[in-house]
Amino acid sequence: MASVWWQHGVVYQIYPRSFQDTDGDGVGDLTGIHQRLDYLSWLGIDAIWISPIFPSPMADFGYDVSDYCGIDPLFGSLADFDALVAAAHARNIKVILDFVPNHTSDHHPWFIKSRASRDNPKRDWYIWRDGKAGGAPPNNWVSQFGGPAWTPDAATGQFYLHSFLAQQPDLNWRNPDVRTAMYDALRFWLDRGVDGFRVDVLWLLIKDAALRDNPPNPAYVPAQAGINRFLSLYNADQPETLDVVAEMRAVLDRYSDRVLIGEIYLPLERLVAYYGKDLRGAQLPFNFQLINAAWTAPVVAKLVAEYEAALPPGGWPNWVLGNHDQPRIAARVGAAQARIAAMLLLTLRGTPTMYYADELGLGRVVIPPAAVQDPWEKNEPGLALGRDPSRTPMQWDAGVNAGFSSGPPWLPLDTNYRSDNVEALRGDPASLLTLYRHLLELRRQHTALNSGSFRLVGVEGNVLMYDRVAADERIVVVLNFGDSAQGVSIAEKFSGAAVLASTHTPRHIELGALTLQPNEGLVLLVS
Ligand code: NOJ
Image (tube, rainbow, N blue to C red; front, side, top):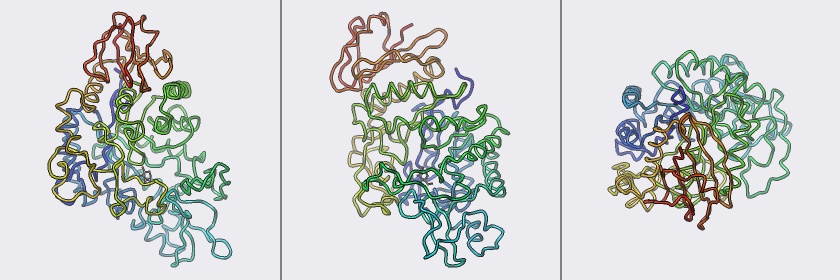
């Protein structure tokens, strides 16, 4: 087994508003997560990453933090948090928090001071500039949620920068006092026993010192989000960002066994830079390539091979199928291929991150217009940008509100919850949940899977084959990305193999003439 937990373990993302509510307000809470730890143990994950739980006006559902060292009452208290960490650790489950350093809430005391006057000591903690003649913003930057990235502030007559909502002013990471304050916040949680952080929009932290205009994006079409109108040349991925990442890592390295995970949406060659010089950066720069890839064996084979080749020596890979900002995997590839996706995620080399309820096969939940919550959808309606369909409540049972809450949930449940819920699926040997649990168990048991080498064996039509090898075992994974049966000529090489897992249950195969059923995947123990 690889030496550290964040390498051989599996991370499970919890969107806390939607996991388990215990006080009937329709929004999940920390006590709810605590109560569901036994489920997570049963499932077999190793770490939970909890999306933000800090005090927040919730303009962006917690990604607008007004106090980095507290818990929002909606989610509970610091005592609830400590109890959750202790209970998770007692079950060998690590706890990863979501750190949001690029911006605060406009309610954060730092911003309230910063906007009060041009000479306030906190003024330079944010990014303030004069507008252009005629009242135009300082430059052409666009908010990720649409509209200008600058808002004028009447009190001092200047504009402040916000890469997201106007309620999320960007901190000035070129200011050393900001860095010190934020590293103190990291230490606050590390001292409480937190095992690591997923860092929000890590590649956006530093902006061009001269705040130059971004060039137009020649490929932009109006059906896209406004952020695509320009190329993010000057507002993202500036060279100095890597210094900040190294500093954050140094804070974590004063503690043992902690992990720094970075949210980074960049092309591969830039993404891998975030491992840092001599691997002193993020241990896991999130690899989102499977999220946007066309779902075919040749495409996935190519991207896996290119990723493996691009990793810096010693850099540990990781894989992600979805998160709270993306359409769910089952919505993208369909129910049958969601099983292939599970097998792929849990058998590739590197740390997998699962997204809550993907193990139930939850798809795109229909959100009636009156129920929309996501500020992005509200800012740029009609472009299908809304993230609510991937953030709906966890479906625990067939009872009231799927066992999620005694009160009306903040987002609607999927209409399928009476059949597709944990209680129903955990007893069904053919369910996706059972497959996930089995794959997680295999991954834990087999060194080849959790730490072994990776080799692309080949692609035949729409079938992808690779192997994972550790000292004394070789495991071959064969995945049919297509919906028709396909023979695999390489089968004779696997004679004597045992089937460790199949997407199709029960599965007894004649390996001498291996024909994969439509949408079928196999994990084979070859030696
Ligand atoms: C990325 C987060 O994942 C997303 O949910 C959030 O809206 C933005 N960052 C802003 O914090």
